[in-house]
Structure formats: structure tokens, C-alpha cells
Image 1: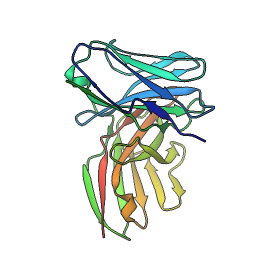
Image 2: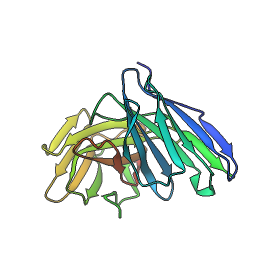
Image 3: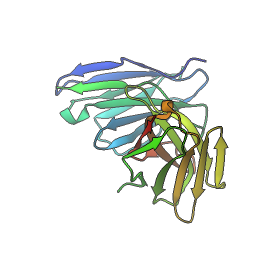
Length: 112
Length: 113
């Protein structure tokens, strides 16, 4: 079974721009969660989608948003990028409620 | 307020010996705990988990112990191998259908030959 895939793997943007990251979960998995990893804050939960609905949300500003499609693929969007948004963005998928999360390789975003 | 803490940023262990990684938590509503291993430029890889109703779970060289009264869990790796060198993250999940994980900041395990 193919693992979680994320595109693109690397991205460079400038302040004020917006960015869209994509995540394809493991086949059959319906839940997708997004995390941000930075050296200072570690891994922090952004939000979780299940059956196209946002089920949980972490403590991030409204500039961070996401969605999930009917095929369970998910996108996250960050608008009005700030330097502090530079991070590794990780996506994880699970087969159902409260199952183990499996992570993708991440998208490395650099904001200049 | 950090709800999951890994107080050792790094740990050095000789090959063949036991590695013990520790994790403390403050939220008594956490009901499931996981350990992940991460190499640079890769996503975390799931290692082992434990439900709050258990105090031990074993999988090959990896054993996780949970002490609920102390709000403490530990990961034992026996014997340690060079390929175990990585950053290890402890994570916890709330009960009741909330799926977002709360992570510790990680412990960098270095296995010395």
C-alpha cells in the first residue's frame, strides 16, 4: 500500500503571498490531519478533516485553512505569509476515529 | 503550556545497550500515547503505542511503559542499534473522538558504536 504523499516537497515564497499544500492519504484512510513543525515550537496540530468536514482545529490563526475532497485528498492553505510560517508541514492519515496516524514526508516551506 | 514534555533534548547510548527515553504529561484526559521516530527531511514514523488502560506494550525491541499515577511514560529500546539514531517524539491523544496529537519536543538519540 502506498504511504501518505505530500506535494510539493519544497517551496519558497515571499511575505504576503499565499500557498497551497496538498496531501494524499493512504488508500482507504478517511481522516487527514495537518501539523506544523518548527525548531522553536516543535510539532503542533493544525487541523483534522474527516469525510470532508473539519473535525478538530488547533490554535492557529485564520490565515491557516484547509479542506478535504470526496476522495479524501486534502489541501491546506496559508494566506498572507509571514516569515514565521517557515516550517515543515506534515500531513497524517488514519483509517478511522482514534486510529494510529501515519505521516507523510512533509512539505518544507521557506518564507523570505 | 506544554502538556507533553520530553526533558532530555539528547541522549547518547552505546550500541547493544538499553536506550530509555522518557516523557511526562500533564493532561489527565489523554487516553492514548504514541512514540514516533523521525529522521531529518522525513515525516515521523510510528513505532509503538499504548492505551491508558494498559501499563506496558511490547513490540520486538521496543517496549513502552505507562505510569498513569505519575503521568509518565518511557520507551525502552533493547538492544540499541546504530539505525536507531534519530529524534524520538512522544505524542498523546485526548479521548472522545479528538484526533489531533499533542507532541513533545523530541529527544535526539545517538547510538555510539
